[in-house]
Image (tube, rainbow, N blue to C red; front, side, top):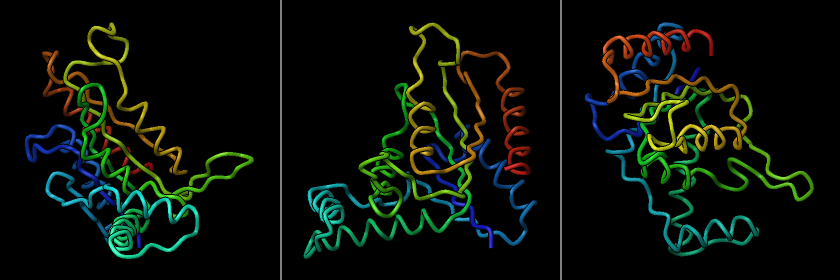
Length: 208
């Protein structure tokens, strides 16, 4: 069965433009795969496990092959539970608004939890990092209020798509289809731009 994990990084619910575009992808994807399993992970309403001292220690234990006990074992189990939810999917959909030229902090929190040695990547001391998610595919919806490619640096710089695309490639996710809606504040054609982005998302769902 095809499994799509839809990660929502915007906290604005039905007012979210990135989610509006991503929803169009999800709807079209279901048309393509009527029996698919859709898992929606709304980061603004999900209590993600903290990346505190026990979780960091547990990660180091995993890297060294040492067992975790007590709070560290509990932290590692919570980490593995979310990683399993992530790796069980074979397709990903992310709605990613630009926050302060980068990604929302809740999405970075999610990344820090699921990016784990031996689970989503490994380190080859001769050849470097190797992602363990080969065969997965993703669609990412990027939005920004002011920044748009080619704009002067005084209007913003892209640490959003550049970072997030690198992370997906690091894990081995390929291909990654990007749908952009920019800018959403400095435009007189937002409705038309939104419709265009939603149509791009629908087409992506039938080609990914």
